[in-house]
Image (tube, rainbow, N blue to C red; front, side, top):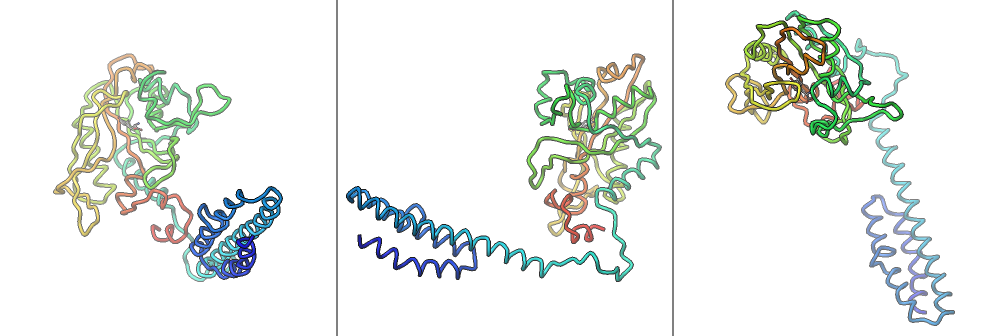
Amino acid sequence: MQLIQEMEQRLAGWLEAIAGSATFAALEKIKVETIGKSGILTTTFKELSNLSIDDRKLFGEKLNKIKNTIGAAISNQVKLIENLTITEKLKTETLDVTLPVVNDSFGSLHLITQSVRRIRDHYHSRGFMVLDGPEIESDFFNFDALNIPKHHPARQSHDTFYIDGFDETLLRTHTSCVQIRTMMKMGLPIRMISIGKTYRNDPLDATHSPMFHQIEGLVVDKGGITIGHLKSELRKFVAAFFEVQDVAIRLRPSYFPFTEPGMEVDCRYTKENGRLKITKDGDSWLELGGAGMVHPNVFRASGIDGPAQGFAFGFGLERLIMLRHGITDIRTIFDTDVRNIRHYA
Ligand code: DAH
């Protein structure tokens, strides 16, 4: 069969072209032309059906051999290019950790740590306790006690990681659980914040991460705490975090099962040279987090039976950091690239 002979003759040329390819694109092109769906080998295979059984076997074997040779050569070359790319990267991006320190730079705090400390300082100065809660939580603290019973639809919006083999045990989906733990332990009055890791089963992309941080606030007493106090506290926090004199805060009605009423917290901003700027006179509103007056059921679940009143709020830390530093991809915060770490030092 003439076609097969022709293939055998062209094989050397293809192999040479493969070995000479420096990019994945060049390899892909050869692959498409030869063993791809409409490649010359694939079409020749189809013509074998016109031959006698013996010829089909003979030529089929030959053709298969050519096809396998090409396939193997392409895989080899892919590995070679991959290795070259890594070697090239290593050459231009070497970091010799064994070299002596030549300047007085001894490392720096991570952006998350810096921000947590700044927020802690702000709230300490306002007379808040700064408390922690466990990241491995029970269903009760994460949901039930926050007025989110078993079949409540709000459970679906928290894509929860449950812990295998442990009944009703999960990675907390928010820091609101610390509200309950604190009220149970200390009773009223309380003025506290909590900052920590939270988890949701979201795929990692530019705006989502399965692990992120939240800031939770709780101010409760037997009475006399109003939305006015909440708004003033939020204004002071946002101004401090973004290091501006004053900000304009808007509370928009919203729904959280553990608040009544619940609200979304917005602040005014404007765009300056393409960068976002939080300012009291901004022309647009930016959503920052959630807040509300603590729901009576939450007080009840926390063992507080007498009169009680107060507010709570919750913010995503990474979102605040991204806004403050003009970061557009959340992964920048968590990668280990020293250039990023130095840049935000
Ligand atoms: N826990 C909420 C969330 O993760 C955020 C939140 C909203 C916290 C309102 C609060 C609140 O304390 O009052 O989406």
